[in-house]
Image (cartoon, rainbow, N blue to C red; front, side, top):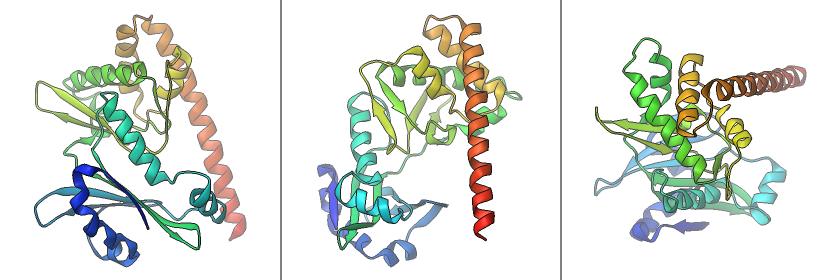
Length: 255
């Protein structure tokens, strides 16, 4: 068992060592998401709230790679979260990353972070067309995305569900989550920025609003940026559908 822990939470190491037993994670906590990865909410005896993400079992090849040649998803999520905070980009504070190895192969990996009160941006983007008040949040969101890109951050899974927001009626704050897949650069070109924005899985009215505000803040022509943004998104979604259909056919043949 390998633990990388934030020194701020060093006293939690004995509690986290319980994750060495997969059954402990299965029996405890409140499930927030159960799919390829499992995400659970935990609260310690002193009232501290955490989220623990257990990544899905990797393939045999990846178990070997993550066990010897490459950092696990949990370790990358931990390191990237720390780097985001140093760059001034909000993300739930990292607590620990834990790898469980058996015979040199990665068996399980966990990423532990502080609980966030933020809500998914999906609800905002889906109701934007009916509620003009949501435009204030979308404008602030566009400014946040610009700040992320100006810092050279390329989130490779910039899904709308991977951005949380807190809005008190006046100020809006955003947080990036699912931080294991991202790269950091000195500068992002406009093409790279649009490649990243195409991943926002939100309805067209909200997407166009985000692009419009982003272009204004970037001092670029909104119409041109919207045109290329929509074109890139359509191509991206077409490729994603083709991949899903191909995988579905492979699964059907195996059955």
